Amino acid sequence: MATIGLEATRANKKHKTGTEWYAWHLLQQFKELANLHNNKFIVYYNQPLDQELSSVAANFYFKQLNWPFRKFWTHYRLVWELLWHPVDKFFASNAVPLFIRGEVILTVHDLGFLKNPELYHPLERIYQKISHWLAIKRANKIITISKTTKKDIIKYFPESKNKIKVIYLGYNQDEFKPTVKEDKQKIKNKYQLAEKFILYIGRLETKKNIQNLIKAYKLLLDKNYNLVLAGRPGNYGYDQILDLVKDHQDNIKILGYINQVDYPKLLAAADLFVFPSKFEGFGLPVLEAMASGVPVACSDIPVLHEIADQEVLFFNPDDSQDMAQKIQQLIEDKNLQSDLINKGLQKAHNFSWQKCAQQTLEYIDLPKPSEC
Image (cartoon, rainbow, N blue to C red; front, side, top):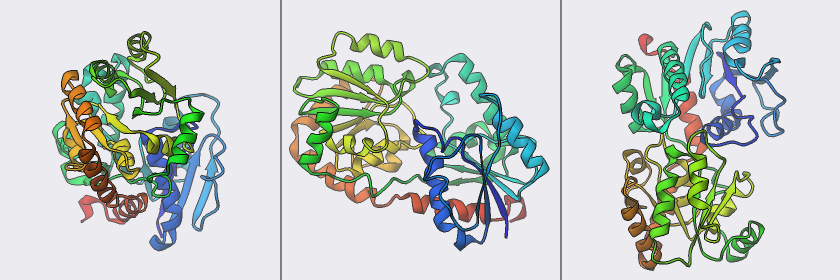
């Protein structure tokens, strides 16, 4: 029986986005699968866990490591714990505690700071470069969430070529599904939304290309549809987004962060989901929209072709005119809408968090590449 260390600080964040939900869902699925893999899991965290995360499971042990500062818990407090009480393997769903003993399995979500550095604040670029270089160098195995990101890792870190495994993300099949008209109206009433609306969900920042989406919306011929932007402010470009919206508040609504109870309901209530990002590690909202029975228009970038191909309508993310034309096409063509919805629902069944967690545990259980 191997002892596997897991850190739950990201999974325990109150306002979760992509990487935090990845950590949360894997922890929950690991509890269900733990007995099948005959492993002992120790979960480390710095603040009291939410009720679902802390639920009892066989072979799962929880350890709160107190730390008086806001930062550096991973690289100081957790490292200290693992040096004194080492584990056989440590799975890092994002950051790697350096200078620890034992095998390290790391998830790399994307390398956008290297591919599109202009979309990041200079200080964030420096931090990301250093932390990823150290983490990838230390990792014995690397999990990444798309073939596109795997190619990027090999390009920038060629020495890692033989230790990378692609494992796609999943979605919550109990939450993301088509809904009835009455439920759609309830969520519209709660957030005071127009009868018809186009939805974007994700961080509101430059690297998500929100500025071009707003410009595209202003070019739409059909103004019967409002644009709804849901997500927490990002670190770079949020003020520009507010400036673009300020004279169009009757038609463009910023909701801010949406809790996980309302998120699937809001998504299922949308007439159209738009995802304009210039790069992604995976593009989870596209999958969730397809599973919710909502037609999708999204960026024509390689990673989104891994999730969907014939199931969405692609546009050039750098061309607001093309974006507007494709959105208008999807609004007007009801047959196209129906076709994309049906294909999207079918494609979404290929993905699940259980499948993601099962493949992750199988990879963790394997010997290190040098031992194979």
